Length: 342
Ligand code: FES
Ligand SMILES: [Fe+2]
Image 1 (cartoon, rainbow, N blue to C red):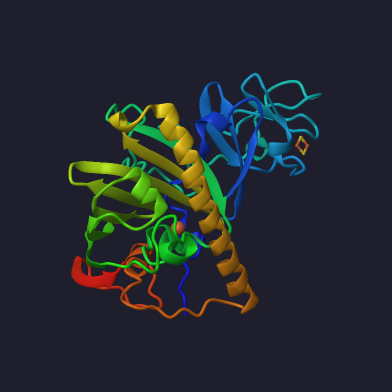
Image 2 (cartoon, rainbow, N blue to C red; image 1 turned 135 degrees about the vertical axis):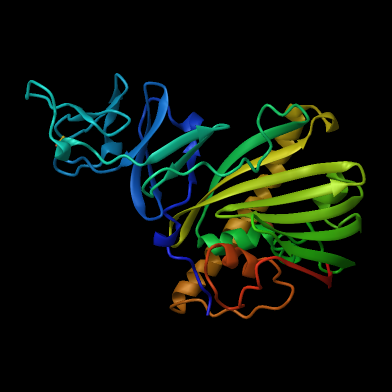
């Protein structure tokens, strides 16, 4: 049976809930780990509260932002970014009672991303895994999306080399033209990766048009929710996709992707246009296959997976997410080599 981490077990971690650009004049409703939140900007800082007014439980996300406070649409109670009730219309004086305050959750903003954390106490943001927006060696675009799938299945999809020949047939790889590739899979205390030694041009439209010879493809997983793909030529990185996955609930994820390419390759606007076309198409194919997979798992009342050694990343993702499942996770540090036809 497939083991899916419970949403409850993931509450201590930071998750990307949105982008800085989304926090404008209106509140944003977002469900993270099954918990409805409202995101907004209060006095220039990002804020996240439970999307429930303490008065009569109307959704705060249906309200409006006035003078840096979020105002409930029902009776006009107004709350600051920390959830403190600052105004109860018709009732002069301070709002002192703690039951009048809305519940705030941890929030942090970095690199145009808004992170939230539902757990108690303090915890640092995870290290930056994507290319920083001000890194002048790369052009980086931020691409928010969603998919209808469980967290583990979305992460596996992005890091799985073997679906490309079918789900992205002709675009990323081609089933008729496989080559033998050596793969090194390793896991440290912080991450897991699969390094595919390619030394050639993958036979897909995108690599042939945009890449030239590919030395290595690397798929990395940084717990709890970041998956990264790096394609490198003989002279270094050509393409780096870092996708932050966030479970909304058991069957839906947010995906905030940072897509980076070296500065010199082409003018930034041309790359942006090409990436929108190419990445958008590949993303839609993945969204489609994930939606069908999830719907079918539901139709059968649960997952019943069979894995092979080619499914290299799933056991390691599950290892970090603290679960065992269809494969028992290997012991702490790990390295193995295998060959596959890619
Ligand atoms: S329900 Fe929000 S002010 Fe009454
Ligand atoms: Fe894919």
